Length: 394
Image (tube, rainbow, N blue to C red):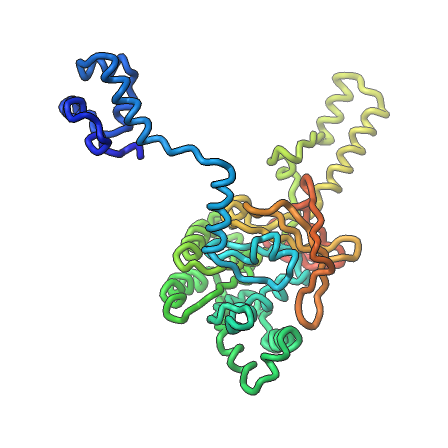
């Protein structure tokens, strides 16, 4: 609106011609000057300048909107945008219908927690006929770690939808709608992405799954660029792919151990860190008692233990690129799906089990979490994780 032409704003012709004669043609140029400067430049009186600026401001500035109207617009946008139901009622309710179209949804968690199980169920749901609540389309499943199991998918389907899968030939038809790709390197994945834009339209693809992004760059470490830089182009391309195709794109991410330097990067963590050298220096300079030094050493030790928890791999740039982040973790013998990032939902956690029919919530009522706990990833009973260098360790 700032570049809207003044001669299109309905000003009196006499004053509009003066603006044009003085080479002030847009709203931005007019509003960049004070009323007294305009009086001097245009050689008109204050009343004419004030009237003209009021008209330009009225047309240029966006109108006020009430919270109610904004909420109604958001609801309408969500309704028109579309969702892929996860068939997990509590999670679907929190997400206003399920996995949203046109954006990136991330599943992050340690190995064995259920990310691939979740993806298999989503692939199945997207390929279901619309009469059964599916999207009645094809699915492209990029299986980086060769974890895709057709046998497990058929099992999930037959247990979840026996009325469909027990029909003759239906299991084969459903399986034929899911296209599996297995790139062995980041360069192969890059070539695949460039072909996907056309494939999404030609093959009536309704869901894209990438399992997993972190595994793609794990083998590229030590070849020059940090993983965040390696993925720069891919992040932008996948986001544009989601917006262009208006389909849900689901990407899994691994976890890595948190390094100490990261502990102070974010304001919400707000903890003071003492190094051993600083403790000794304080003891020498300030004559701190031995018990005080022990207290600080204990604090340092506790800080080290606290910061040894896991965080999502791929870094902060990737975290900003995803619209929905679902954290899967395990604590006190229970598995949880945590809605850690969403523009439309509070941070919620849902306890779940993995059964023969896939992931099942223990309760549709989510537990609202506060503070950093929503992003904390626990790994009780899961030993295969990714460290900072992208290598697995036990």
